[in-house]
Image 1 (cartoon, helix red, strand yellow):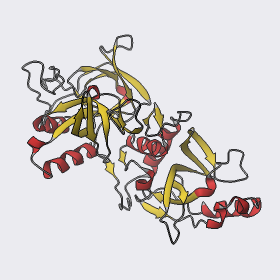
Image 2 (cartoon, rainbow, N blue to C red):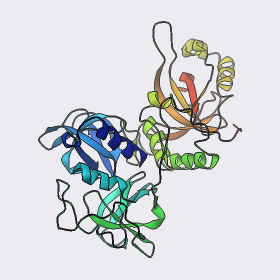
Image 3 (cartoon, rainbow, N blue to C red):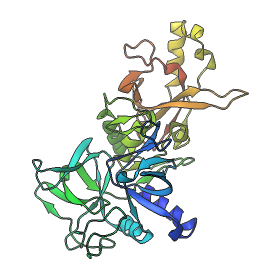
Image 4 (cartoon, one colour):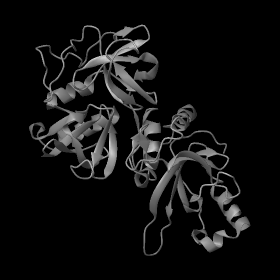
Length: 365
């Protein structure tokens, strides 16, 4: 996984490995909180298989830095701490990504068997390979519970499958079974960073898959800091829809607007005034002008425009569907129109300030 590899490489380059405490997320979603307290605000979520650095400890709480980077607190039970060598082995091992909306890992290749844990879209698990010597489970410190050495690194062989089931391994070494139709081999992610024009990176087919994944989350409630089927915020919806289709974006809307090719909407600041928007015909013309350059799949951003005193502020993001509609997470994941005359008009559409394009996809809108 590109994000994990980049995170590990950064840690290797920035100091002696022995001084780094590294871990891998073991649970389907890792809740990262502002303070080491369950009542503290949720900052973001990370997904199973993500490599993080542990930089602090308070009781059973661990302060971690995620690849975004985000620095926040989670509990020790959501992580498997590993040595640098174990991290390298983990990085090099073949992996699956869960591409379904929600699912489980089962103890046996049967949906009637006991569950080990749940899964959400974007979770990453190791592939159990025939003869790979992956039977031993790790204890809480990331060490093997038996003498079996992990041979996953560089292991050549065939994945263990049984009918419609595939065998997988959690970071702790626990093994179980998932439906083969719900996972795909994890290749290199398309990593789109801030300042990356992303030309040619996202195809028409991939952009349609991203939109399909976003639509699968329709009705999921808004959750500040959420990035899974259990709840998403606006940038979390965009990011997880992309991750499920092999595209990696930064976490926040204020970062995402700086990715890909900018799309100008030429917003007239006058319409931030409620009084100006009372002229419905003029406001309708304004919004239709703003969406002229947008293409299906563009990310669209909302906020306040730059002034002589203050820079532009991005507060919301969605995915443009064409015909003036967007899919976004606001109260819940929903589809709204940017057209003031539409029945499903988005009440904050007047705050549309810009867009970005992640690839050279289709020209219609």
